[in-house]
Length: 294
Image (tube, rainbow, N blue to C red):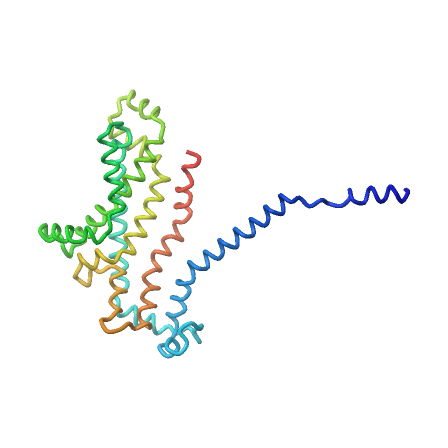
């Protein structure tokens, strides 16, 4: 082979760098870096809370940002004995599960006719429900307290469950109305020809199709009810009925805060919710993504 042939074939043997591929990889690296940075910013408070919970009072005062010298577990032992942990977790679980069941049942039943009846009245009702999502909690505190006082529902499990259910129903109606409106009507028409009533059509035809939006809604309601502090503090006075958030708040004194008790209590209060999410994460994610292949 001549020298000329070698010089002409050598450049063709080299791999050409595609500028589009380089730009695509650069964008991917930048986007991944931004996501990791965002995750780090979101996780840092949790890491700091856990780190502080294992420190002694001396370590917290001398080096509040440093790592603990050892895993000091006495903080957790004292927090467990002082906050009535097991009882408060049972209270929070019972209230949260009850609210989720009522919100899902009542919200879906209310959303079905609103999504299927095409009238101006139904659209106005949906808009009013949507406005309920923008109502601040402090606006409803006084009316709820006065109504529940007159009904004798203060300091009762029924009262706190009904309060949370009423507050989360607008979210449920908003979720379900949009989802049901996108479902095809042919299945309902076929069931109606078979002699099914409207309630039977909802229960046997529509309800099984609501799994994706129900999983997403249940996650939102669970987070909001479990972490809510205002209404349990307002409506509950018996220590045996306190939720986890109220039990944690008991370590905030009028003159100061004891970090060796507050941080372990905060970690303990978050553990059940984190455990529930880890156990049911596949069902939650699977239900939330099932609508894509509906």
